[in-house]
Image (cartoon, rainbow, N blue to C red):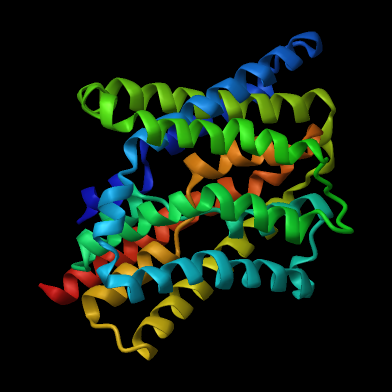
Length: 323
């Protein structure tokens, strides 16, 4: 059980992102290089979503939609309940955050679910694994459109963090178009991609590292981190724990209230409570511009680690009760 818990907490992506974060803070690229670094990061993001388009089987999702009540419930938790929680956090007196960090909390709550972690924890806990696979994949498919739309609707109007009209173009060219192209060419090259999955997974991880490095190096170049103090980091940790506990409790209550059995309720709880770092970081770099990106992604970075720790513990608790 201890080894399973450690594997859940210290995943390779977390380690890679931490390395990129530290590098961006301690070894930022020269100011004259940053525009080029950011352009390369955008190209890497396009490649990531192209790969996602190849990996996601739309036909499998359509075939698995017979359990539509569970999938709809998970999508509603991910893209409705979660954003409501993020919006409500601004009214907690103990978590009065600066606008950029609150925007980051809101954005974190709009990101789609993870795939690998949701499936792994559902499996460990004895939940509906096939349903979790379809739901988590469907969440990422819907998130390509839903997350940018939510961000534009809830963060742009009258907010201190603004998104320019060019954002819609960037979303279309960097997120949606590569994803659609991946879906188009999937029948021809899916086997080739599958045979090189380990190499491509490493390339994808390195692309995310580049995105994180570019965001933190840009913020460091603008001396943005001098404005972030220890109290705000503690507030982010407290916020992450609060949001995770709320969403785990709400998702389980919703599942049981709707009459789902134990296996489905576990899948709903673990798929509905996750936020995908690998998808959220690239999206943030496209949706937001300037040095605010470094602060906006902080809540997602912290929540990602908290969700792994909390859900690894919960999954093992379910497993021990089943034994």
